[in-house]
Length: 370
Image 1 (cartoon, one colour):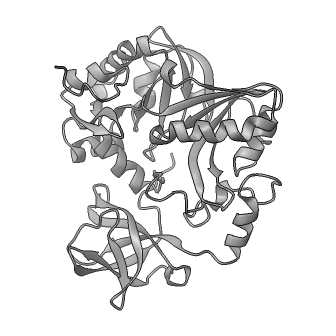
Image 2 (cartoon, rainbow, N blue to C red; image 1 turned 135 degrees about the horizontal axis):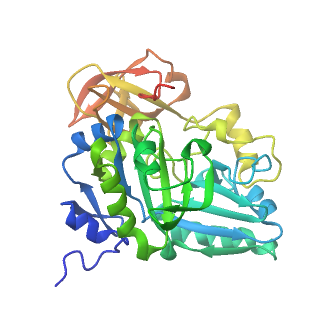
């Protein structure tokens, strides 16, 4: 019987096996947690270039007259200023201000948008969108996830690697912009300058039948720069160092973007988006606040560990890890707003033992501007 037979496979599943990935069950998908090792892969992306299979992500096409009006109601950020080819990060909210999902909105052209949503939330998100769309009769919502493969190329040598494979001048593609049609290694792709690592890089979308050829072409082009395939483990440490949230940890159905320090992506002056009234009330006195902290004593914080002050639990860790770039143990977590000041000390309860930590300014890592 085929290994991982009960799991969903991305179009690049065979590449995971070929390149020695340690394949695990990730939300029902067969994906590699690591290839050569999490620390080595993390450093590959920070210092060189890495290739990720992110085809498990959900992709949705929103088209038709009224598409912008529909999206303006659906998400918390004002999309009206978007130029053709521009990408915005934003959130879908419940009426209580909690988060349905965080997502990327690509404006391909007027009345034609492409959305990238979290894999585990795809069915839930689609049902939510369809419900909101009932009053927008000319808008069509199409789940194109099964017809879309997605690879991410990230790191300082991502431009040099990718430029070998295309005649398109990559210097013309600005951060958070997309080219709807370009050929990479002769393969038709949609190409965006985005990523989930804090490094410069690209996300490439193609038909599933081309995914493995694209993977191999990228690995060959990046060979001289020390390219490596990257698994879920390093993907998490990279995004965490860069202060990028993960749904189910920093964001969830009870947590708004305001508590998660993502208010810059919320347009409270935009009328009529779902959750706005609740956000206005929350903004007056946030029930909790996400903080970054460093461990002052030995111990690694993990998701769900209690945060305590004077022996009393006041919050919880959302993400914690050894941060390879900083060479220290750090974490993020929620505490009451009145306790969220930089410099405050608190305890992380690790195996029933309080371990001292200090709140610091985030994010933990920011790429140096060239």
